[in-house]
Length: 230
Image 1 (cartoon, helix red, strand yellow):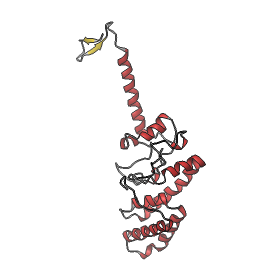
Image 2: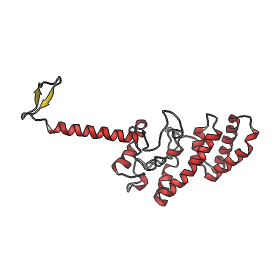
Image 3: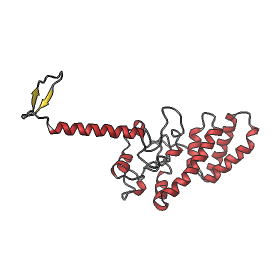
Image 4: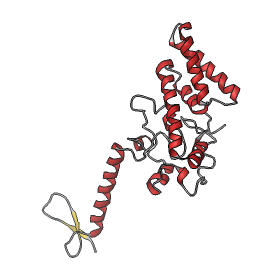
């Protein structure tokens, strides 16, 4: 039986009948220490090799928050400080922490019940290609996917750096995610050739967005973020 023990220290401690420290408190201290150490490690390092592709197939490297400066910037799935911005991602917990996988494409249970309708709606980043991305990884390998995604990221970075008027980043992100890369290249080539026709960055961005929208319309692609109600 445990009972209070008034020692010489200024706080009360718990001792067992034998006067020795209970083993369960030692265990609790160890758990707290290692959980704190794990928390510090997760803050300072990435727990995934490729944070630009989420466990669930979302293109984190093409997300507006990935290309944002300041406190709202996200370093990608499982990247540095990821858990401060997404503290309760059950998919990452299942995929990386429990099963030690890079993406759900490597899981024997893919697609599980949670993932079957994952591409039906969007958040602040489009989910539309998420399951397609995972199937591509499953069929062709992660390296091939990362190579193609890296091209899309470079194209997006070019759009943001050269043609963002401060209000177009989200549109460029979804366009870079969903449109064929050759079409994006053509649009960039055209706006580069014609940019001297426009008086300011705002008019350049307007023309470029219209051009990308025309490409999307001709391909039957919707460049919109879908809410849970749609």
